[in-house]
Image 1 (cartoon, rainbow, N blue to C red):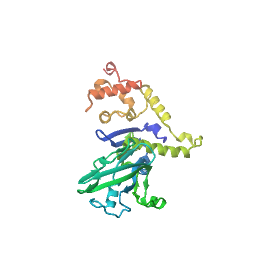
Image 2: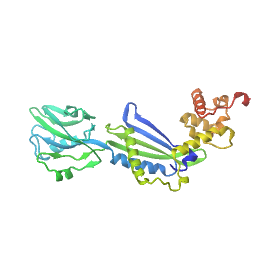
Image 3: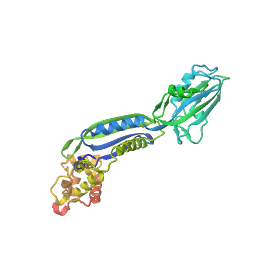
Length: 331
């Protein structure tokens, strides 16, 4: 970690679902960060999320009576190319890595959707309402679909050059389970420092991985590369590198000695809820030292500071061996 973290405290990482009950989209926040680190972390995570996460996709189709993608099928409203495009929108979750062939059989009149696919227990269809093909009266339709698990993008033209099997129609495969990644960088403040940053990331997936699993995978992948580059155990200029244990120990030590030590320890490192933190800062309480000199009655008089905020402050201070000033001393 950047040595600044020893001064401003550990960054906090929080996750909030964009919609209750839906784990495919979430908003991630990390702060405070040193200047420039919002872009550094956000851009690296975004690139990995969009390009390197494993997922499942349809890679080829075999339709009875069809030899190539430019064929039209009697009684079927869509062309073979349109059917291929529909299958590119199919969202799947596949548990094993091995390719698997699933099937689809139907007779018209019917509107065939993804829920009509015959799949094994290894594959889950995540958008069963997706329309795949429309059949007129008297029409019949039989096909086999190859599903594979992979990473990134695989062009149909490249696989067609290598395999070129008659009657097999290759489909461009987009394996990535991540639908959207957007990040935003805003200013953050700790004590007297106003040049810090807060990184907010909005991640949406197809559902084959949750948003939280996606960010975890991307972080682990980046960590594996950085660990490879830093394989030598010798540290370069170690006095300018902070780690979590050193930064955490520094915070605990500062907080423990706060009542008997004339210093300014930013109140943000206590990780209060936004409502409680804003009430304290608006009242002029910006450090742990100032907070421990306040009584319960003093805090209760602050604007926007209620009973829940008081309980939160008392519990947080107690966890660090601290407490508010006695009412008798204040008198």
